[in-house]
Amino acid sequence: MDKVIPVVVIDDLKNTENILGSIRDGGINCAEITFRTPCAAEAIRLGRELYPDMNIGAGTVINAAQCRAALDAGAKFIVAPGFSDEVAAICRWENATYYPGCVTPTEIMHAIDEGFEVVKFFPAGIYGGLEAIKALSAPFPQLKFIPTGGVSFSNLSDFLSCDSVLAVGGSFMMKGDITANCKEIVKICESLRSEK
Image 1 (cartoon, rainbow, N blue to C red):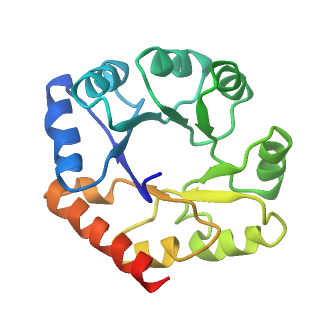
Image 2 (cartoon, rainbow, N blue to C red; image 1 turned 30 degrees about the horizontal axis):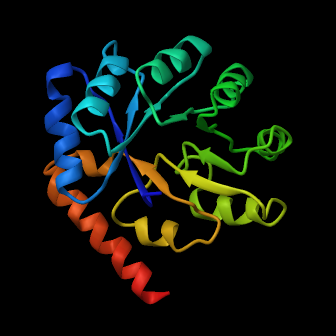
């Protein structure tokens, strides 16, 4: 799995190829296309056709209808800002990867009860960031987190250096030159690997 998951908002279907191509050209082979726009499912479908080897998933999936639309479009994973029992059931039935959003001990315990080993931690910046993740890792050592919201170039290394962090999500690389930003992220990830 990529250590950084670009969170992508596609407002116009015709931008899909350019955006995903820019991410790939920067050395990152995954993207989370959010269900915040009417063309999200079409963008996932087109992205999967254009880049069949790319790990393209759906983000901001908050209900069963969106989940079905995303999976029908070919999404390889589903990400949500919170926990939906309906979405969890569909993903289990379809054998699809689901990363539900969990930030409180109660939400995390529910996720563990439902068999999850990885959760999205969102919005990370508001809910305590890395300090909160480290604190939650003490009672829940079996769980891995994907912090999203509040991750930036300035704290990326800190998040990725934490053993409880599986990967990070964010849109910080989508501002400005996407390819150059992704190349910088790849450099940071390689530097962290060489330190281990």
